[in-house]
Image (cartoon, rainbow, N blue to C red; front, top):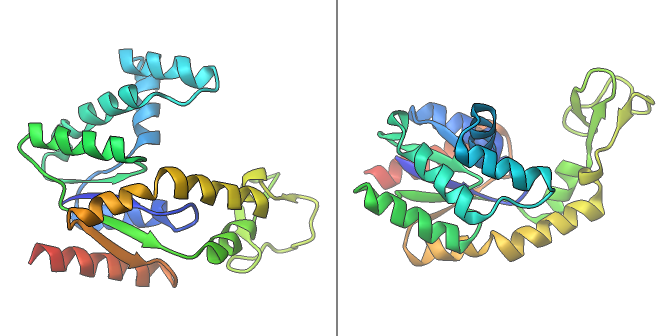
Length: 212
């Protein structure tokens, strides 16, 4: 299976990407992993990407697309893959289709994890991090031993106003790819509210139904 996983911040993409890819026996591929591998490996693309990142700029689509193309051509992705964090816009989605077409392949499905904005704010704003251990807690789902401890802090990107801005950016930049895949009959929406296992089962059921 060749899959793309999309969804807003806080939808659980990272967790579900790992589990679903493991269930299918295909590599989970994220742009973050690709960037780190190229930068640490000192590849030409990695050096180019590092130049932008060191300057605090976004890595251009052209560089990102080349890295993704190389990763998808790797032997372990021959039998399928799950992309997490790419494509981020419709231009990248079109490039991905052309990449796969050039390899004689095509995307099977785009899985959209759906969750409303209020739930995203509840999930992310409740996170707290221990200064001493780095462990991440959640005031509601995984409470720390002492919620009032001075050892705990809230990351700046987990503050409600910042989360709302992240959701706005997602809606403007990434959500349009949902329409792109819907128009092509490749979009499946997965309710991402509930336990991890329940969400995974919904995703796997959708994948199995498409394969039949």
